[in-house]
Length: 110
Image (cartoon, rainbow, N blue to C red; front, side, top):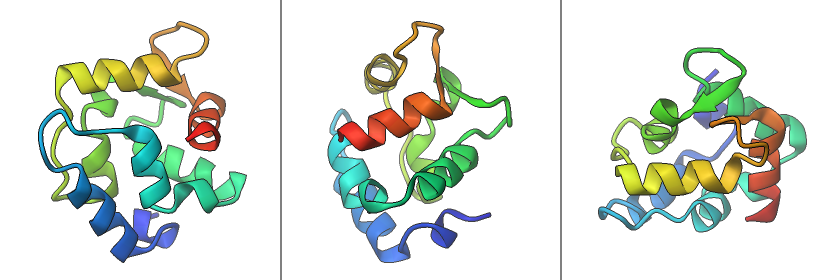
């Protein structure tokens, strides 16, 4: 499944472009711009599975670094600081990774 099966290609392009500058990533604004906030829980879960590249059932720190690329190939890598901030925002149980429920909570709170 491709990200464009769930989200509009135009919204993805706008959202990824809006955070192209280093240290500019804001997950709350990004999830809203990309249209994820308006999606059903099922669609949010589909996006989670697309971002979970190794199919472990979690999005780990090394996958978070490439989260923008998960939405669009031209997306930049997040800095270590941005990656750690995103992980801290989503990792509610402190296990060092973001599960599907934690991801859904992040989207809902954005």
